[in-house]
Length: 220
Image (tube, rainbow, N blue to C red; front, side):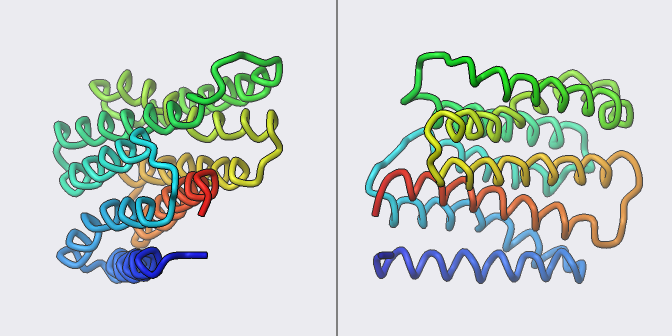
C-alpha cells in the first residue's frame, strides 16, 4: 500500500502533470514553464516515498531528466538544445545502469533487443537526422542510441525474468522514443499546434512508467 507521503506526492505529481498538459494544449507559455520544472522533482519525491530500495542511479536519471526539461524550455537556441540532448542522454545512461547493474552476465536473449536497436537506428538515420542541423546530427545519433537502450534493457530483463515491472518499463521506453520522435518533427520539420502536448503527454507517461517499475522492484 502507498504511504500517506506517497499518496501526497502522487497527487501533486498528477495535478502538476495535468496542469502542464493543459498549458501545452492551450499554449500558455508561463504556466507551461512553471509546471514543467516541477515534474521531475515531484516524481523523484514520489519514488523516494514509495520505494523501499533506494537506487542512486534512478535518482540521477531523474535529476538529469529535470536538467533536460529546463534546457529544452529554451530549445530555440542550439546551445540549449545540445545541453538538453546531453542531459537526457546521461539520464538514459543512468536508467540503463539501474536496470543492468543486477544482471551483469550476457545471455542469448540479448540478440532480440540488439536487433530491434539496429532497426530503430536505421529509422533515426533515414527519417529523423536528415532534418536536424549538421551540428546536432552526431550528438542526436548518439542520443537516439542511448534513448533506445532504456526500453531495450527493460525488454531484455523482461525476456530474462518474465517480471511485470520490466514490461511496464519497456512500455515507458517506447513512450520515450515516441516523444522524442514527435519532438524532432516539431523542432525541425513542421510545428503543429498541439505537437508539444503530445510530446509532453508521451514523455510524462514514459518517466512515470519507468519510475513505477523501480517502485515495484523496490517493494512496498
